[in-house]
Amino acid sequence: EPEVTQTPSHQVTQMGQEVILRCVPISNHLYFYWYRQILGQKVEFLVSFYNNEISEKSEIFDDQFSVERPDGSNFTLKIRSTKLEDSAMYFCASSDHSQETQYFGPGTRLLVL
Amino acid sequence: KNQVEQSPQSLIILEGKNCTLQCNYTVSPFSNLRWYKQDTGRGPVSLTIMTFSENTKSNGRYTATLDADTKQSSLHITASQLSDSASYICVVSAASGTYKYIFGTGTRLKVLA
Image 1 (cartoon, each protein chain N blue to C red):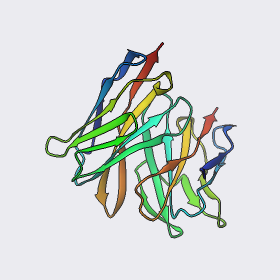
Image 2 (spheres, rainbow over the protein chains, first blue to last red):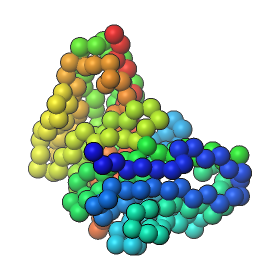
Image 3 (cartoon, rainbow over the protein chains, first blue to last red):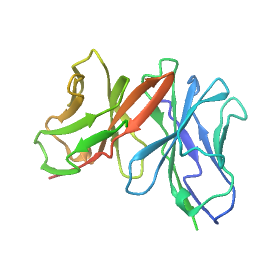
C-alpha cells in the first residue's frame, strides 16, 4: 500500500540554524500538508500546498517557514532560523483530488538546542 | 473561535469491553469531521470522515456518530483489543475556500489484558 515517507526521522539542531524536513507524498496525490505536534500537545495545522503554491497557512507559519516542491516527488518544509520552541514532531500529509482523507507520514522529530 | 473539545482525556478499559469517546466542536462553517487513531510516535491514521448530512459511519469495530445540530460526535469502539491502545483525535474541518483543520487534544485510550 502506498504511504507517505519522511526524512529524517530525527533531527537535532542548534538554535538559529536552518533545517529542511523532507517528505515524499503518495505519488498520485495533489494536496500536501505540514502539521506539527509539540510534545504532549495537540496536532496543529501549518500549511497546505496545491498546484505549486500555498493554498492556506496558519498563524504559526510565519516568515521563518517556507515550503517547496523542488521536483515531482519531494515536498519540503524549511525553517530558516530555528528557535527552541520549534522543537516538535513535524508531520507531512497528502490527499488526492477529493481531499477526503489525508494520509500522514511517520513524522520527523525535531529537537532544537 | 473554532474549537474542538474531546472527553475523556484518558480512558482505561479491559480487553473485550466497549467504549465511547466524545467530541464537541464550535467550528463554523462546518465542512466535515474526522476521527483519527494515533499510535505513540506515529502519524495519525484516518478512521472515519463524516459530512453534515451523515449521522453514522462505521469502519469495522469503530462507529462514529455526528449530530450537526448539537455539534457533537462520538466514536464507539466495540470489543476492544490491546492494539486499540492509542490516542483518538477528532478533527473538524471548516469550509473556508480551502479546508482548515482544527484538531482536538485527543483521548488517550489504554486497553488492558
